[in-house]
Length: 77
Image 1: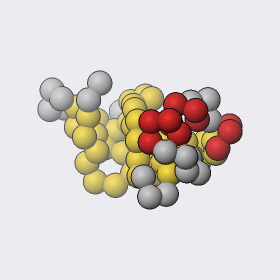
Image 2: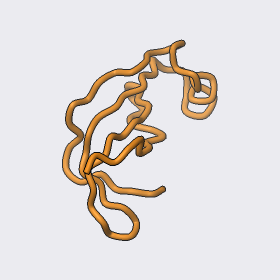
Image 3: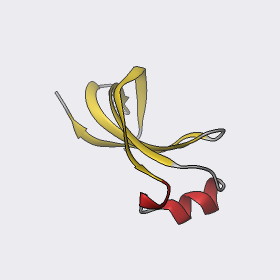
C-alpha cells in the first residue's frame, strides 16, 4: 500500500535496535552497515485513493541514511 505522510509523525517510540531487528541483515546489505533502529509513531497519511486517515506507522532508520521501509500497521480512526 502506497501512502504519503501529511504533517509530522507523533508519539515516536523505538521498538528495536541493532541485532534485535529481525531484518537487520537485509537492511545492512541493501542500505549499509549502520546503527539501525526500528521505530513506530502516529501520523496522518494520504492513501493513493485520496483518503486521509490517521494510522500507526512503523519504519527503519539509521543515522546518515534516513527512514526506510515505512509501512502502515493499523488505522486509528
